[in-house]
Image (cartoon, rainbow, N blue to C red; front, side, top):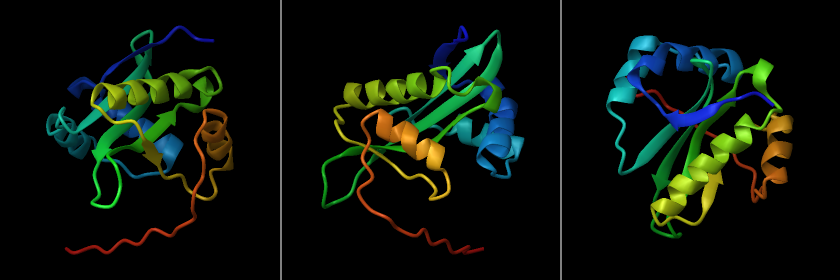
Length: 145
């Protein structure tokens, strides 16, 4: 297991975080947009934690308060990724536990996340940590501009 620390995100992390989002999650990422998003983080509603080893960013998790009229407050995982060379070393679990701790500190006792149907390794990871798949769904997007 590598020696890593978990800390809150900083503006200087934008470039490395973009690289992780691109390489590990398959999302196109713009560093300028990432910097703007980090600057606008609302600490009352969300948190981003990063895993760092020897000043190198190797993973992250983004969690937010999720409110709907018909259910108790939940913490929603918006993104979780660890660089391929550092997977299966406890980083994902440590990041998920940091998000769970944040939720509890904010009076939230139910975690929620979505995971792509093809990410079967991730599904096993979540199930191993006590998460239960409770439904299948499709995601719909519509660009308005």
